[in-house]
Length: 210
Image 1 (cartoon, rainbow, N blue to C red):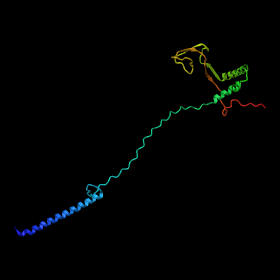
Image 2: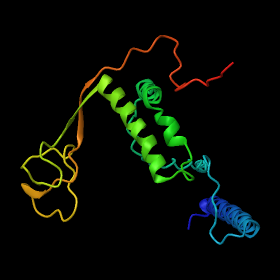
Image 3: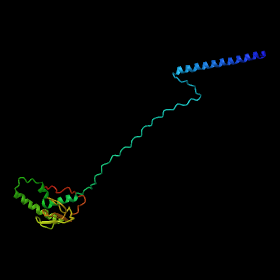
Image 4: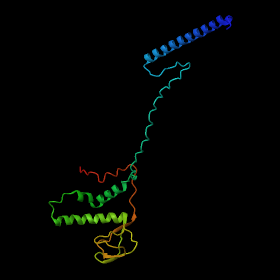
């Protein structure tokens, strides 16, 4: 044995032992620190501190649901446009019938207390005056040339505005029946021109005798 190397060997052993003790102490201290941290945070897994902690995801704001498209409301079909009627001609005709036959007086009179003979006499005058007025301004012709209460045949393709079929209407034209009324059609209308500013609603002025 070389006695000269003995102290050096002993010093190396001492250094190794001291380093081992120091490493053991450091390990114990670190374990204690980790254990305390686990107890403090209430976790069972050791949490190693991270140098660069990952950022926590921020909650995304919830977008409001888009409103559902409104179902278009079906508009009812618009009613057909009715043109304003010009009533001047109709009022003018009433005025002419009143002038010639006292037509309006007859229709507005209370005939309850009159006998049939008296009404017949008045109606004769009304008929004559109305006939005169109509013949002066209109030409009237019958639609059907046959006599009333006589047989008549309605041809295929007839105009419903000319013939009104009554009774048991079955099948298609031609139809055979009895003429009840001949109908009327205007072929001429020559009402006098209305003077500017004339009030056609005045069918007859009130008459005052002084």
